[in-house]
Every structure is written in C-alpha cells, then in structure tokens.
Amino acid sequence: MTDLAAPVTEGVAAETPRPQALLLTFFGGHVLDQGIHVATASVLDVLDRAGVSEHATRSTLSRMARRGLLRRVRQGRNVYIGLTPHSRAILHDGRRRIWEAGAVNRHWDGTWTLLGFSMPESWQRQRHALRSRLLWAGFGSLQSGLWIAPGTVDAAGLLDGLGTDGHVKVFQARALPPTHVAEVVAEAWDIERLAGHYRAFLSRWRDPEAQAPDSLARDLLLESDWLQTIRQDPRLPREHLPADWPAEPAQELFHNLSAELKPAANAIAAEVLDTITNAEADRLAAR
Image 1: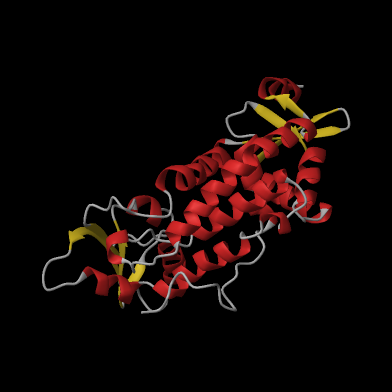
Image 2 (image 1 turned 45 degrees about the vertical axis):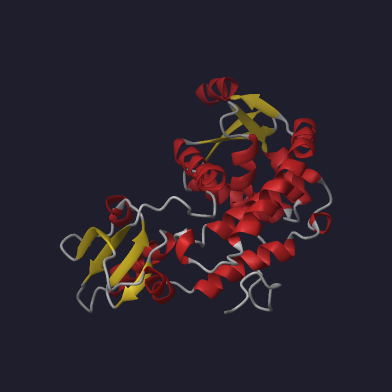
C-alpha cells in the first residue's frame, strides 16, 4: 500500500492562497459577526504582511465589491469596508466547514447521493458547468453520466440556474452486497491526489515562522491554506479510507497551530485595525 502519510512529493504543493481567499479569511476572522466595517488602509496593511501587494489587494477588493461581496462607505478621506448578506453566508459556511464539519468524516450514516444526467451533445456549456459544480460539491464520477457523493447533498441548490430540468435525476441510496464500498471510493475519487493535498499542508506548516513575519499574517495564511485544502476533499467515510489517511495528522496540526497563533494574532489586529461600527456605516451611507 502507498504510504499516504509520507513526506510531500514534488508537484503536490498548493499554490500560495489567492488574494480573495486571504481577504475572505481575514473578514471571516476579524469582521464577521463583529458589527464593524474596517478601513481599506488596515486591510492593505494586513495583506501586505501576508505577502500580497497593494495593487493586488485593491484590485481584489474592487472586484469583490462589484460582485456584491463587500460594502464600502466613505468617511472623509477614509473608505471603510463591511460585509453583505452574500459574503456573510459564504463566511459562515467556511467557518462551519473548518470548525464543525472538519476534514475527517467519522459519522457517515451509509447513505449516498446519486446524480445521473444525459444531455444533448450540443449542450457542452451546461455539461461543463454541471461537472464543475459536482466536483466542487464533492461528487466523484462512478461511471459515464453517473456521479456519487457521501451523505445527503442539496441537489436543488446544486442545479439552480443551470437549466438542466428534465435531464438530471437524483436519488439517495445505500450500497448492498456484492458492492464493496472501498472499491467504489477508489473508483470514483483519486485517493492519492487527495492525500497529497494533506501531505503538502503538513510539509508547508512544519515551520510556521518561515511562512510570514508575524502571528497575524501566519494565522491568516494558515487558515486560508487549510480551508483551501479541505475544500478539495469530499469528506469520504473514514472507515473506507486507508489506515494512514493524512487528513487526521493535518487537522491536528492545524488546530494546534491555530490555538498557538490566535491570541497574538488577535492582539495585533486590535492594534492595527481602524474600524467603525455598522451603525456608523449605515449613517454614512444614508447621507
């Protein structure tokens, strides 16, 4: 059996988190549920500590505002940024994924969501869009046109806006003999690739001090990296994965480092962040 807990090999290290991923992590950790807007200058300072240029941060903030993820208000020469209902929903989902669901699925109830589709050859755009959403939602391809995911998946939300009504069928099912679930898992998902993401995370964070100059930036990079890692994992049933599955040591490392970094990171944030309350932002927006 391949040693899934072996040191990371070439080609599996993840890219540096993109500016938007880092910004969402920042807003999730220091703005979400705090009742505040934060000054653009403060955001630029924090992202600079994490190695993101001022130009990249400003461009990403503008793009996120255009997409309805951020709200901006002006007070004199300063611009303050707050969250919208859309971004709050995204950040709450990320928080749930990190701190509640976790990377290890030990509570699978034996059910699967099966999704089959058959579309005209001319529907290449719809087919590509559906496959992209299926992969993002943790589905694996069992055979041509038949996809499978552990547990219950909100298929209505997954298919929303695709215009595929009448071409997609969704079922819940349980495996029966002579089906071997471990074989289904190995057929539908690239287990070694998934393991590689966790090995890469373990390798990158053996030396946290090498990642960034201070605890605030390290905490930001750590959480963004971890969320990026687990979002590529469909959370397959632990009982049907190899004994040395590296998600477990990776998750333990993440939790330990996060506990070490948070106090200092929050202290730095309290010093450097220029904020106003949401109520003040509402008054400014009403002028």
